[in-house]
Length: 330
Image 1 (tube, rainbow, N blue to C red):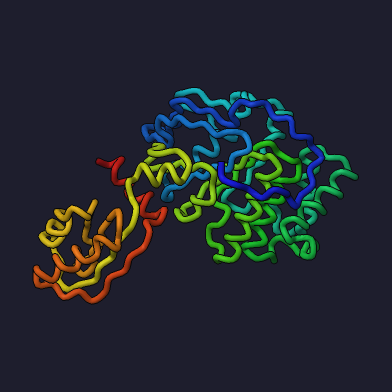
Image 2: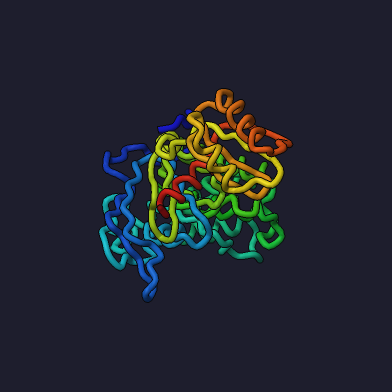
């Protein structure tokens, strides 16, 4: 598991005494809506205390899978266990061990930030003294205490996202489900949200987070990649990177590139893969960019191509994602 912060900012009154079994264990789970399988034969385990990221494009099934974990939907087929229980059979106590932050803001815009937290705490049956202390702790942790009297309707998008996260945290859940927490936020706020998620994990809470932002996946201990309802890859980012077989990338800008140029580059012994990004851009995957660069440039020169620019960089996790998606199609 990837390293996480040693200490958390939110004090927890719950002692850590977690059983050793997985927080989530799905076997061949399918969820259909009519003839459409929004989640298709998904098998997945998430260990306790893990920060698990579910990535993929809009409509690939991430939110449906989150709702299956939360017990808001029942599988059409397969076996699903969350904290050792079928989610649709949760007792009231077991459901209180789950925190869920939906993608859309679902609180009361006319109430203040603090009042929204008080309302949610009341739904969980938290006593008045514990409620007051816990609301202050969580709002302070999420940098919302100074804005506690502001109505949710007047709060910024980033504040609303943090308020939703605060309400999901109030009752100290063992498992947090966070659906698209950084969608639409600026880079600085996205970084802060991920810092909060790591600090929540450091308390011993299992965190499952969905995102369309592929680069965020490397912030997780383990990642599941979804496409068209299927989980096409699952594992630590380093393992997924290794399975994609990517190392370094050479990006070439030149005039009037065509498929014959790609074939010539691909035949080089120093090249693993090559493809046209556009009629003027070529993307080449190599083990060693420094060794491959003279071969790539020389081949294009011999073919009469005028090279305007060459960039080299390590394969990003977006490159890994695209390669694994393409492999699943093949």
